[in-house]
Each structure stands twice: as C-alpha cells, then as structure tokens.
Image (cartoon, rainbow, N blue to C red; front, side, top):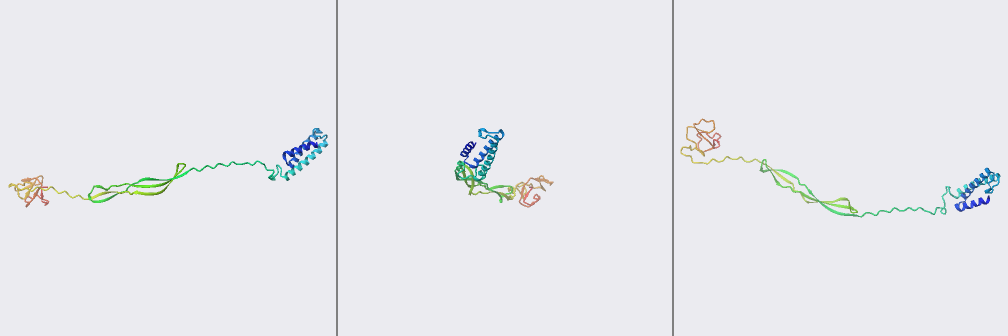
Length: 254
C-alpha cells in the first residue's frame, strides 16, 4: 500500500507541482481505499488485508487531507485566496486586438458667390401739374442686386455646411414714384359768336344772328310771347333793347 500511495503522490506532484494539492489528493485517494477496506474487510489490491488496517488507512487519509489543506492555503496553491507568484502565473497572456482607427475623411473649403434681387419700393406724390383723376408713373422702379459670399465646407466631396462671409449690394434699387394729379381743369369757354355786319332788316345792337326789328323780340323756346323770335346764341354789341341777355354776360339766348 505504501508503494501505491507513493506512486500516486509522485504522479500528482509531477502533474500539479503543488505540495498542498498533492497531500490533499493523496488523502482523498487513501480515504476511499480505507472505506472500501472497512466495508469489505480488506482491500487486497491496495495491500490492505484487514479492517484494522483500513481504519489505520482512514486515519492517515484524514491526516493527509488536513495537512494538504493547510499547505495549499499557506503556499497559495489552487483554490486558495493567495495570489499566485509570477513564476506560477499562467504563461498565456490574453492580448486584445486594437480596433483600427478610421482614417479621417478629406475636408475642403470653397467660397461661392450668389446674386439675389432686391425688390424696389413704391411711393406716391401729389402733383399740381396733372389734372385731378389722372395718375402718371414719373419714376419707373428698378430692382437692385445683392451678392452674398458663402464659405462652403465639403467633407469627402459632399457639402456639409455653409456660412455667410459677406453681403454686398452691387446695384441699389430705385423706388417707383407715381404722381397723382391735383390740378382742377379750367372751364371751357363758349365758342365765340362771329361778329357779322347786321343787314338793313336786322337790329344793329345784336351780332352773329339776325335779330329782326319788331315791337318785341324774344328768345325762341323761352317764355316770351313775341311777336318775333330769335334763336341764339348771339352777341349783344349795343343796347339790349329786347332784354335778351338776362344774365348780362354779353351773350344772349344762350
């Protein structure tokens, strides 16, 4: 039995290289052999020939397990809380593959000019040179022009943003002016009555129309009762003997 236990101890030592683990495993093995010998009366295969020898092997097994547990804890063997020394550390070190950093996309800049129209204003003024009711555009409106300069940023050839750099008015707008007439038109004078030399049978105080010489002459279409009538208009060039110019403006029967 001693040879078997020694062989097991040697094998465990070569495999684990830890004295505590060696003693612990040897104690466990001897424990099962001792239990087998006690139950069966002997364990001939392992050189234990009686139950008494089994009980002795059981005591040795407990001693080995106790000593192995203490040695494993003291020497920092497997399962203990002590950190392994550098010589007992695993020779394999996990290496982390670095994540490749993406290469930055090319960034370019460009200045761009854009022209936009400026609308013109409209205004009105009163004009005494134009008759009432008439409107005239005296100053035509002209739209202006504004040039805006942008700084454009391109990332990988695609426009990403644009910022205003400057604004310049290249053509100022001209306001449209509409004149509204305020002048009152002058009254139209009546057409002058041609002055004609009265005939011998026409009254000399009137011209333009022959006024007969009678006891009384009235304007045709009026309220007079004649006996003679005359159709105007006609001019009064002398005494208005027939009272034909009622408003005294020199024109009779108007």
